[in-house]
Image (cartoon, rainbow, N blue to C red; front, side, top):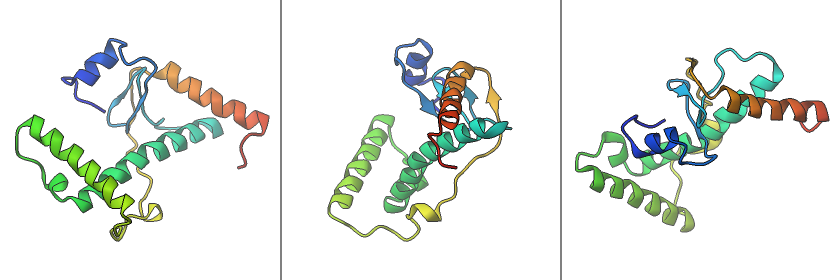
Amino acid sequence: MMSQNSSVYMRSENGEMGNGILLGDSGYPSRRYHLTPIHNPEGQTENLYNESQIRTRNVVERTFGIWKRRFPVLSVGIRCRLNLAQRIVVACAILHNIACQQNEEVFEGDDEEDLPVVYNGVENNDGGVEERETIIDYFRNMLTAGGFII
């Protein structure tokens, strides 16, 4: 999630981000624009929602992990002005993409199979219920229409 002092938070709260949705772990509250896993899922549709939410979020988390292994400065902390720190992170992302295009060696343990699905199990749900229910209804419709192979 984002800091309550960030411009993204303020813009999201004010509805300026359109239909954009952020996925986060359950360490943060669920809101209309920030969806978290369901702590105690009931039934197949809520389990599918959780699995989809967690797998989608973990793609980003795995990418951050790869960047931290490739660029240790991202792991130990950047001690400089925020503006410069943002540039360093963007530079690391660009260098990572160039390394991938050049078929640079991927470090040991970067394989998706090696990384577990993370769910920290604490639900803070003070919003986002309608949006989450819309997604759960999608899974429910897919199950009843035979759109999933389970």
